Length: 316
Image (cartoon, rainbow, N blue to C red; front, side, top):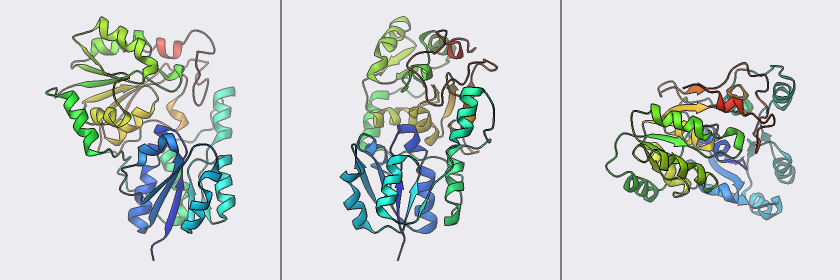
């Protein structure tokens, strides 16, 4: 009888996409039935993943789903979030669990004291280290991102006859991870193909400004498409210019050429674009030797120093 496994990752878009190699390898190599638990607002990210048999989600409390989880009688849990809420799930289910090293101390030292004790290891590889007792191996195929055929059809209809284009992602959860307008202008002017602007409604003002300045060079879709349709547009692109965002990881899942512009965070924290060796490799653009970098492992709503040099000083 195949094993039944519960994998947990509550947020965010990029972090959930980064769990997909573990999901795929457990499903394929162990023949296991994989269930996935996340927050309700992120459930759609895994909705079409063929390696997942059943999706569970919660809005706030573990109590919303714990009885349903108990009824499944899992063989073990793979905890890829490792926080108080996942600890509560594990305690209430009372079964064998596996997790990974979050490197919180090493990250704190790097962010706050600029002492580097971080290993040169991507978080996906740390996930695999955490479940090595299951005898699964990294298949080297990178990330997955699955969307409905209807979403790809909508994306293709938007693209139309445009066959060569790049993506510029303007949005990010935190201001200090967003590409500023002045840098976006340089990216647009240096592009040999049209640029499609993507992002959420929170960056529509910046997108409208760029679209007005460069009407022939840009197509402004900011705030106009769903996440899945945006993914379908990325899937057909030549290259993606982005900050440290969830769309960066979706671009990696589609094996696109990626240019990542790093502000308050750094690739050494282990969350850079995860690409197989057969894919075009990511290019990191950042201001090296800036004493205040990194100022956070996540980001801020404004530059703590007030100058935002980590982004504004990036050269193209």
